[in-house]
Image (cartoon, rainbow, N blue to C red; front, side):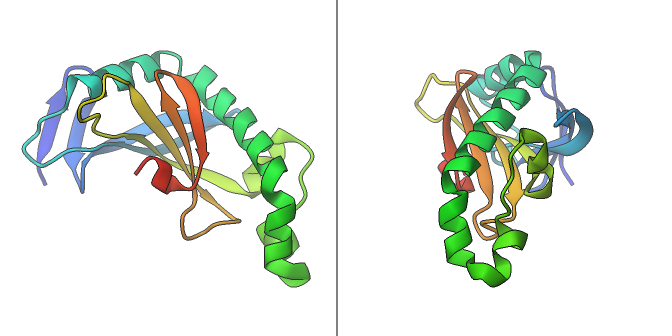
Length: 159
């Protein structure tokens, strides 16, 4: 497996993009997710990707807490529709009613911090990716542009 040592992002291995373990706190509990930097095996990482990682990582706890609050608000807006879709038999399992942000633990699990290629954009783009109970095929993403939440939705908003 190819490896790369980047002076900003650290030691990465190539696995359908450049990856390494990455620690963050999810609802105040430490967790290790996959840091994934989009790119080819040639080892080229864009300066925008380095900048996106460095700026996001510098205030990681703030960004994760903002994402948690935004996901809670997002879920609060869609859970009724999800419950209808699943029907009485599966609603409590797939889209339970929650009243506190801390209850997100039963619905979502962070899996990755994703830094896509920026192509011609000067924006710093970062995605926090999650598995989620209400959409197991597309899961969930919080897309940040220039360290601000831009969009929450299925992972295809960032992938």
